[in-house]
Image (cartoon, rainbow, N blue to C red; front, side):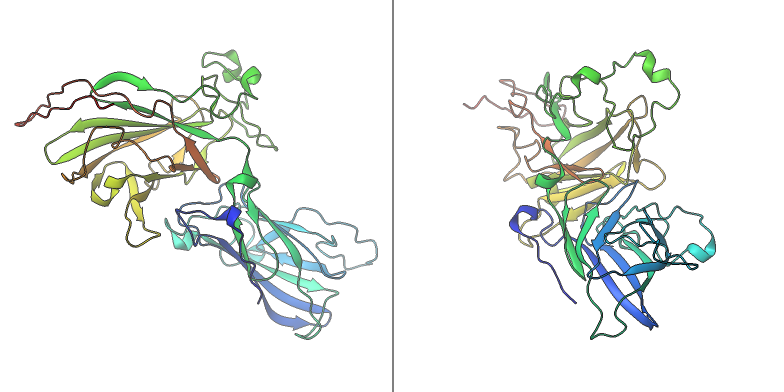
Length: 395
């Protein structure tokens, strides 16, 4: 087995060991080749592959062909004119494979197949983080000595971002490869100030500004407006920030021993819903999360001495899907955090999000934080409890 180690461009400090590993296991030999089982394991803690799913490609070392496939299918057959009678499933020198739909005939199914290419995150559900299919390869070596490795592996999940090569392939994700601009942003507000700090103008680039749709446009009543395009081109609601997704962090209450936050995520893309979305948050008080009311929560502790990062995701069959832009394109939850009185403060934005927060839809979208970073404190605040707290401006 060969392993490709990733370079620094694909390193994720919140998930330093996260990767998708592809194993190519030869199970038996045939008169002109072999039968192989190909397994994709998503070992990323919070990043998943959503519909329309993964696409796996490679280049053959010789003139190998694929006689048959179970649990997946080639996207193109290629030129099989040199074969008469029994025609291979694919003759392309560089085939690409996709997963099958649920409910295909039993004789086309294989273990862990047929999920439309969706791979769950290892941190959410390890059983959903694997996909497998079987190939019968011909015009190939028939022993360990004569067989040759496929090379130049590519993985789309479903868009670009993954880098990988050779057997037992380790594919790691790079935000740099995936997209030029951010795909979501953060807005901030608090109970002690009526001001909402919005996402900056054109946070996600304004390339689609001329084609955006107002929320009362007649276009939204047309049949098929929510159908995704083959190129995944978005149809965005007209906003100041022009982001497909916005996360709003609202500091809701400050109690004697606890404080309460409401997190809302809104989809502004009319052509995309997000299954198995994940929100990754970095904040020093996540080491004392007491209760999360409408999301699931799991700490991410890539470095044992630091517990300031966690992933939030939807409750199964309740809000694990963020619907298209519109009245249902929103998920939200409140959470209660216990105070550490040695560190808790409402000064200088401590109670707001860290800049490395990410929203994970089909990949990882780093959230662009607003400027100024937080709503300013009033000169004095009184809280509805037995104690009053005094806060002053700090320069």
